[in-house]
Every structure is written in C-alpha cells, then in structure tokens.
Image (cartoon, rainbow, N blue to C red; front, side):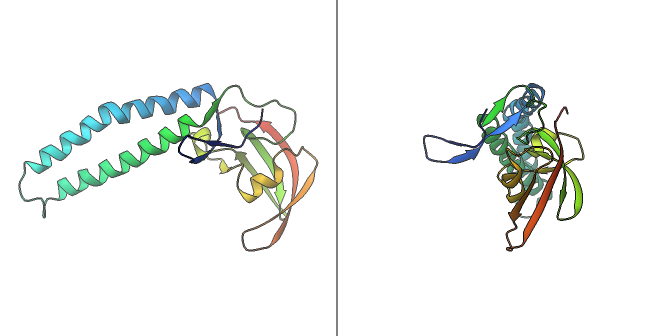
Length: 171
C-alpha cells in the first residue's frame, strides 16, 4: 500500500492518514456529534447570551462565539482528516517503516520512540507523533530495522538516524 497525498477536485492537496477502524469510528462519532448536537448546543448558548442584552459587554456571548469558532475549526479538521483517511488493518509487522508504525530509533545520538502517522491515530497515548511528510518521517519511510539514514533539518543540519525497531501501532 502506498502512502502520500490526495488531490481533490479543487486542487487542494491533503496528506493520506492511516487510521484503524476503531480510530476512524471514534473520529467519525466526534464529527457527527459536533455537526449535530454540538452546533445546536452552541447556537442555544449564543441565543441565551444574546437575550441578556448589550453584546459589547456580554462575556457569556463572546465566550460562546469563541467556543463556536473553535468547534467549527475542529469540524473542518475532522472533515479533512476523515475524507483523506485510509482505513484498514495495521501495517504488516515486517520491520519496514510506514505510517501506523511505532518506531524506535537513535536520532542524532538520542534514543526516541514515536508513532509515524498522525496525532489522531495516537488517540490518548502519550507517544510523540511525527508525520510521514516531516523531514524525519520522509527520511525513514520505507527503510527497515537495522538501517541508518540521514536527513537534513530545516536549519540545514544533517542528522543520522539508526532504526532499531518498527512495530505496528496497536492503540
């Protein structure tokens, strides 16, 4: 399976994100709640605050509008993520680095363990997450346990990475 980017009809590029069925279902439920009950709840809060009078000095009204803006941003984020998601089983346990893998590596002399993928896949775990399109992710993608690769950081520094372990993320 190849991982990369999707281009929609409007020419917008979005990164493909691997999700387990459980992760997809959890995110879809959150999205459905936000676009249904969530929007209704916010509209009710705004209306209640509006009925309190002068909007210039109405803290409840401004707080509800701010909450609405954050919720709409989350809805847009989830919509993009779910539209570009690749749903399926965890990647094969073959030691080859790909999205959905927990990677242990020595990066610039420091041992690190992280998920290659997205924060959404990681859910409530405290794993660090690196995108497959990040400089580190791009460098290790497709390589296997035991290999050493190099990548260049945004400031131009060259960093060696020795991949010591790559296992599918199980959530």
